[in-house]
Length: 451
Image 1: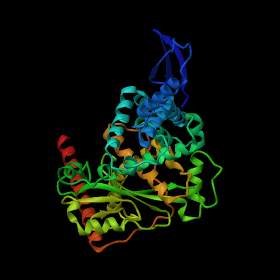
Image 2: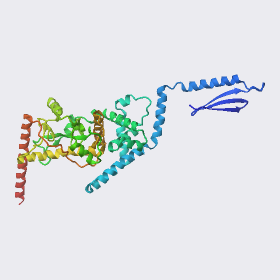
Image 3: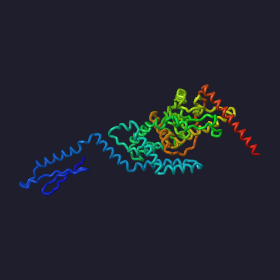
Image 4: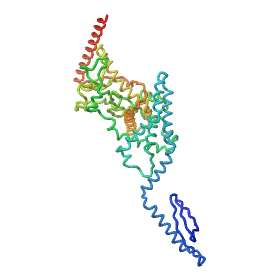
């Protein structure tokens, strides 16, 4: 601490002044006019008194309090332009997506970008996430490594969203925000930790009245009478990771396709198993290594042991490869009859909901197109963060323009078939076909009467 000393002559006294950043300490010294000499003993005494005052002023501050003041100072320095830089980074990412969009999608994307650029909407979403994180019970909230300043929650959210929404490296983001690369890494994963702590609140299985309201008819065109209802859609997607051979020298969509199609190592991607509702909101999320070939067997067993998880006469609709059971309906791998083709056609309409949700997830959070990391736990934390934020954005009414695209999983095979599942699927196929024929005959009779 730099201390400035000044001598002032005030009303016959010499004053020794110590100048601190926030205060002034004065000590008056009597000038010995009778002897014409300055008393050195008086100066020493005054100096000691000043030191005692200094000590009493600063001693109450503990090590933690001093550290907190330092953190606050560093935060204020960073606070000036960080928020604008984060918004600029997110905005530039959206503009790049706009340039890469097909002409027929241009107007839709433009409209969405205008909504996203609206300051009020942006502030609402950021504030919504901040409020949720503020009370989260995460290790980041409970403790912090000493000696390391942390950004305000507002800037932590903005910086982390900028990283998730783009595919820039930590080095690039560090240079753009003028924050040390190691701190960027720490800030981002502490944010993921805080969001992951909210998983049970935002990715949850609907029950009771919520579950009933979420049900959708198996077929909108055939009515709801006698037909089963759809509770959710089950499927999976793959998130490419940096392979054992090292970082790829490919950019854009080619990176994702190269890793998924040509990479032979099974742990070069993550499996993301999802169940979404009719609005594309995730109710179930399971992340596993690429070598894990399990197809919702644990979920199937839970549904079997707890039938109350599904409302009466309702099912999950799943893609190829998933088990066919009394609670999960899957398409025919090879539909050989008109009845089976009709059944598959109705299932496709529901499966498209999950495809759109998955496309929206990857479009909003571009980093999921290729995670440049090999640590499974960290990669899992990033993917789970994106899934939770996806639900948060939907809860805030924020949708992202994305075109549904069915992910090719190689040579599809039909999953395990339980006897109960086979019986129920056949019964539904017959019911659909009968209702379709009845509707067709009714339409023909109506036309004949009109003639």
